[in-house]
Length: 115
Length: 112
Image (cartoon, rainbow over all chains, first blue to last red; front, side, top):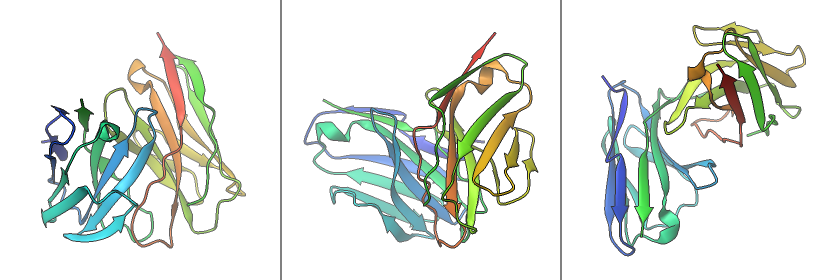
């Protein structure tokens, strides 16, 4: 059983389109995250949700809208896609991490290419 | 979160031990030291973490200096599958919810 699963694995789309990436975790974790890895391989946090509530929004354009229908799912919707949005997007989850004493589990990533 | 410094790259031969260093001279008393790795075309994978004492798990060992200003991730017998980018990250024990700030990490190459 995959602990954190993302779909789709690859996504190629044209500029201006709207697309969604889905993430599900079956670990019973309270907190889920979206990270972005750009072409230079830097990994940066975008959002964090705890039990369906938005906790962290790291200066991400409002074209990106996360949605958490329940604590096992965190989807990422992107409006009006731009070339610069091309990257690999990783979903992750963890228990409620009140002190840094837990490891995070990452999904295998969604490679988004905007043409 | 405090900053860490790691070598850009390291190499090892298969079945030899690997010691991956990390400097964190500005670490605070409340920071956990976390290690993750990222294999090619995969998401980051949790390896190990610790606060003050050395830690062991099935994947690796973490040796923490007495002054906590540096740490070393030890892979006891490197395999080809261990070739990855290894990230050393400080997590503030006092912060409520998790940001992991990834640096450039160390690219480990394992030769057969």
